[in-house]
Image (cartoon, rainbow, N blue to C red):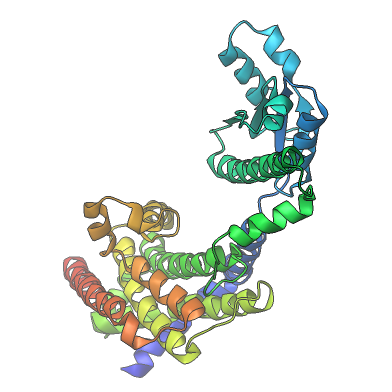
Length: 401
């Protein structure tokens, strides 16, 4: 039995070896994707373009603009008071400001800051003049980041100016800007960050991406290996071989397991060496659970192959499945923010539980005492999926014979 299984596996490994383009994609595609996504998403959101309408034109208003420009997040682009004079309505002026850029060489601004007339006089009179912020909502994430940076800077700037004028009115020692900023920082709540002290986004995106790559490589390889037999007409040769359906499935599984597992180990090394993401928990436990997850997804891959007549059909179905899986995995959208019924549905997607396991072991050093619900879910889902796949395969063999 073992020899027959290994013969089937060796035949598929030879097919993979002779398809050099697919071999290169399998080996280097996953690593390249991990590096590109990790580097692209790991950097802070800095240098967001900001435009200003200064209706006050005083040293204090200019000092506020300089303070905003001095932040790493915002970058002063232009003073756009003339744009409002050229248009009869505010909406037309805003459309001109936020859509007049070249997307390649001069991206649209993210933030418009409008400083009101009498800004300096209001601060001098210990008042709080309203600085108006208009955000480019078409870019929600950069706009949210720009809003936080602008609000913090404007609040801090106003506190410095007001405190200095209050000291002058009371005849006390006028504090410097550094002293006021220091006092404001002392008033902030104490913040402690666990598991990702620098809040590096690569520590979130890289493990999530590795989980998705393991999923897509495994299910795609399994689907293509079996659908290839059907497309090339060699599936009938499997039917006449003295092998049971379980042996055929096992033989087809080994190359897919090898490809998926090799990529996963390689990606763990890339995360550690390139992005500095160590395995905080038990590495042996993670590697063992990865094998279990692979066999869960293998069943889905073979199911796709059974309903496909060609490799292109199988690839298309896998891509459609991937869109749904990534949504319910918690990678693109937090599952906790979904409606209750959708959170329940998410539990029936294996990648959801694998994502929790991977992040938990990598970042939080958790073990079986915490992860056992996800392991049970994967076990139950794997049993159901593979049982249905084996039944479907046996039925297909019966029809062919």
